[in-house]
Image (cartoon, rainbow, N blue to C red; front, top):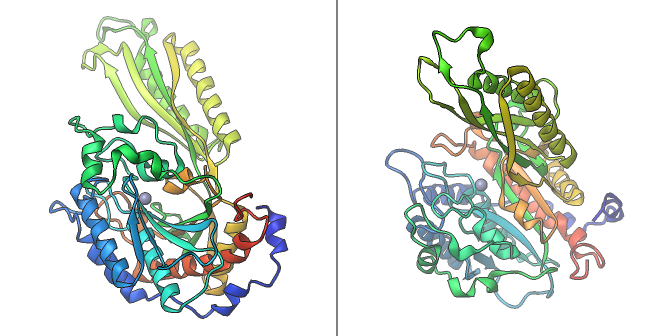
Length: 443
Ligand SMILES: [Zn+2]
């Protein structure tokens, strides 16, 4: 899909126009979010519903019950992903419009991260079913298993399984060494049939994910809808600074090679790359240890990890290059030896411009202001982008809090977001159903 494809859709979006007055049942969705939030409610605060744990299984049971009550058909795949669709044979065989998110949380996380995107997708499918709205491209709801990777150290487990990009999946364990296969069996998955969880190329016309922003931007701007333009890529550099451990009282200042002072310069330079020079979106030093870390010795060695993020691969690479230059500058000025090694690189992912256009049209139809923005956090959508064009919608997070008990969004914003999702599903039909478009198996 390209911008010109979007223009080619023209004004005639019959599905959207016919159902412009359709709305989700906001009270029903808010109630279901509250009920789901009780599953894994942590006595110490927030929700602890780790991927593939008994709590995530209970969440899947809850979703299965709700779908059953709505007359929807539900199945779980070998990786523990849950899918819901309308009963009966697909009206038009071919690629489907996949919509959803995840239901697992971090330890003492919030009740909305992931869960909102799944419950809202269920609500949209249920409303379409109740109103017998015929979609040329079938909508399928997905609840991906273990997105956070908080218990089993394999984040994006379910979406990677669907895309066929899990690496040595059965080697994954929890921190105590219990294998993922044991958890997966308890979750209704089938470890020996993981390969059957893979969807072939052409089977997904597009993937839509509605999510809380997890940052302060929408609330700060007073805008209820975020149109995500891309999900950031990230490069983590491990940096070793080697100076010389010496006596803090007897070593004259000019004779020192203080590794911690050199590291401090790197910390400040890292911040400057994003905050002052705008080379990339964010630049952070999140980890630092000094050796020997005693009061009366000049620090001889420091290990730190710095990371840069951006949605643009060129800016991301430039962020890394500047960080490396700064390390070389500090090495030359301090007399310390500084080693830099890339520990992790993930590529930025773009959402499909035509789907951004459809999301904006949906928000306009509902009279909601919207704002185009990047996602600084990772999402299942960035994995599904390997298989299909993706679209992402954000709603505001109160005070930007997420992955914490204080995670919250105003009920009105939650309802607005779900209505935008509904009209995005309707509005995308013209784009996805078009012969030769990305929605066709050959596209
Ligand atoms: Zn999430």
